[in-house]
Length: 122
Length: 112
Image 1 (cartoon, each protein chain N blue to C red):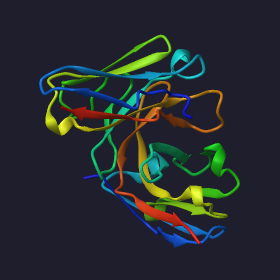
Image 2: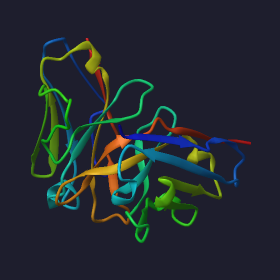
Image 3: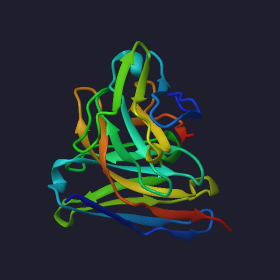
């Protein structure tokens, strides 16, 4: 059974940092692109970043470029998101998801974790 | 403002058919990039409902179907049930943006 379990969220002041983690199990982690998606309270989904199977390619939504860094450790079946220079508007549930249902043009996120809440407030 | 536009809400009575639209442009759906749909039940993580315009993952009932026409895509739900009440999101790729994926703003489905 595919499982994705996020951790590392919490309350942080504006300008602060956190490292979010996602522990994967039940599939060959190192053979899939992986994504982070966030959802602000009462708002819709926003894709944040994704990373290639071997970590050699990474993409980010414009609003987090230069502040967030996605990485992975395939030996430990783990995905990470380092979030720096946090802003109030970064407050959200952060989901880890697998880019697993791919067509010739795009990929759908076929498995999701339950999310970890990041609250940025003074 | 998302590059993929969905109606904020739709509603229907049990047993009825509803559709949810996802309107894009020539840099996303109109360019031929596939569209995927997700269902998010209250206080739950999103779940993949339809991928590649019209493909259903294992376990998703055939009451859910997808289609595309021009710069838009649609999700249709037939035989509406009370537990279909949820938020629905479309997702695709946009070549004018620097990232990978984009989501629509989401549509709240209310079963009357």
